[in-house]
Length: 118
Image 1 (cartoon, rainbow, N blue to C red):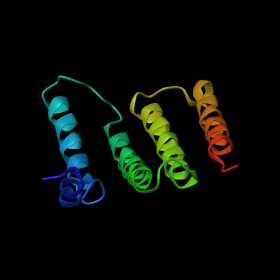
Image 2 (cartoon, rainbow, N blue to C red; image 1 turned 90 degrees about the vertical axis):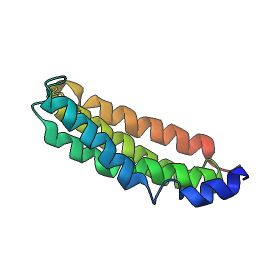
Image 3 (cartoon, rainbow, N blue to C red; image 1 turned 60 degrees about the horizontal axis):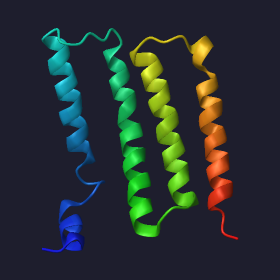
């Protein structure tokens, strides 16, 4: 079976991203219930669900059309949500780490300029 038919059959990523997300969340909660990891802010994992969806959207657009502005929007959104989830999950100090969001926005601006058609 060639790769194109296999990727169509698998429905990458939109159709099975929910299942993968549930598997990851279940695994993390299983580790926490068995005292192998300890997160006080476990609910912050649910903030990652939209980030996973945006990463999947970005990947789908990249595979369909290559690198461009349609890929950058969801990718930057996913990075910003991931940064917020990490800050919440590990109870990090927002007052010290807010410049991360400026860095993400700056990287997005640079990528937009670099991928603009001549």
